[in-house]
Length: 448
Ligand code: LLP
Image (cartoon, helix red, strand yellow):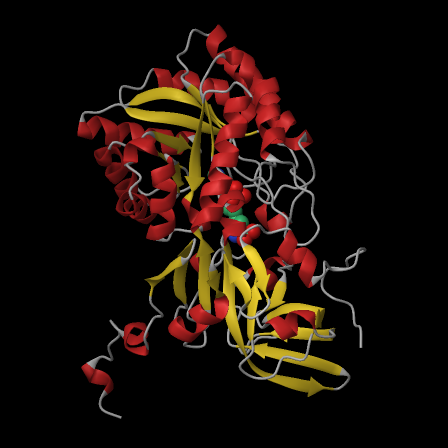
C-alpha cells in the first residue's frame, strides 16, 4: 500500500496519544472524545457545522506569556509584536491585545484589522516590501509606531509623504543579513537572493541618508530571516551579530538609534521537529544584542497562533482505490493550503473516542477539490472513518484561515474561539449569497 509521500520521513509518525499529549489544550474524553480546553469538538461541529476553525484562547495567552517572560528573564527590554498575517481574527487579536501585545502588519488592511481588534497603531510595526503610498499615508495618519523600510526607493517615498503631512516618519531599515535559515525555500527570507530588505553592507549609507531627510526619523534596524525555523539558533545568532555590528557603526557615525527589531520565525512542532524554545531565542538576542543597551522587539506569528488552532472537518466518504484507501473530508486545500503549498505535515486526529483507539491502517486523507495536490496526508495511519465521522487537522491556527480561498465556489469556513468551558462562533460560515455578492453581468451580455 505504501507509495512515496512527497516528503520522506525517517521516523514513524507520532501516535494519536502522542499528538494529544504534546498539546496542552487537547484531551481525549472517554465519552466526549477529542476536546479543546473544556469543550468537546462534537458539540462545536453539531452547532456550527464543518469545516470550522477552532482556536484556543488559553493557548494564545499561554504562548504569548511564555515568549514575553523568556525575553524578560533574559534581561531584555523587549516588545512582542504579533505578526498578524498568521491569524487576523478580531477575537484572536483581542485576546492578544489584552495581554499587552503589539502587532506587526504588512498592509493597510491588516493595520485597520488590528485597530479593530484593539491593538493601536502606536503599538504596531508596518513591514513589507511594497507598501503603497496610500498605505504609508494611512499608517502615518494613524500614528504608526514604526515603518520597516525595505529599500532606498521606499524611504524616499516615505519621506515625501511624511513631509506632505508635516510629520517625521519613524523608520527602521530592514536589513537582509544574507544568512540561510535552513527552512522551506518558500518561507526563507534572509538570503541575498530573496526580495526582502536592504543588503546589510548598504545599510549604513542608507541610514546616513535617512538622517538627513526632513520627513524621516531614523529609529532602528530590523531583520527577519525566515519562518518555521527549527534548526537551532545558529542562523539567528549570525543575523543578530551582523545587526549588532551595524548598530555599532551607526553609533560610531553619531546617528540616532532607538531600537532593534529581531523579526519572527520561531518554528513549532507539527510532527517531530524540535524547535528552539523561547528561552533559546531570548538567549540568542541577549548575547548578540543585549550589550547595546537598546530596547528590542520580536515579530512572532506562527509560534503564538499555530498550535492554538485546528480545522474541524467531517468525513464525506471513504473511497477504496486500487490498493489505496482515500478518506475524503469536507475541508480542502482552499481551506488549509499548507500541505499542498509547502508539503507541510499536519497531525490528523479522529474526534470520536472509539476511533481514537481503534486499529489504524494507512490511508490518504484528501479534500474534495479538483486538484491532485488537494491532499492533507499520504499513507497516514487512520482508523476506519465512515461518512460523518469528525476529524481534526492540528496546528492550523497560523497561516490557516488567512490563506483560505473560495476556489471551487467553496464558502469560507466558520471560525470558533474556545476559552475554558465557553465557546463562541467568531465568524459564521460564509453563505452562498455572500460568496456571490457584488458580482454582476453587464446588460450588453443579454439574458440567458
Ligand atoms: N515578520 C516578517 C517580516 C515576516 O515576513 C513574517 C512571516 C513574520 C514576521 C512572522 O513569521 P512567523 O513567526 O510566523 O514565522 N505561509 C507560510 C509562512 C509565511 C511567513 C511569512 N512571513 C506558512 O504557512 O508556513
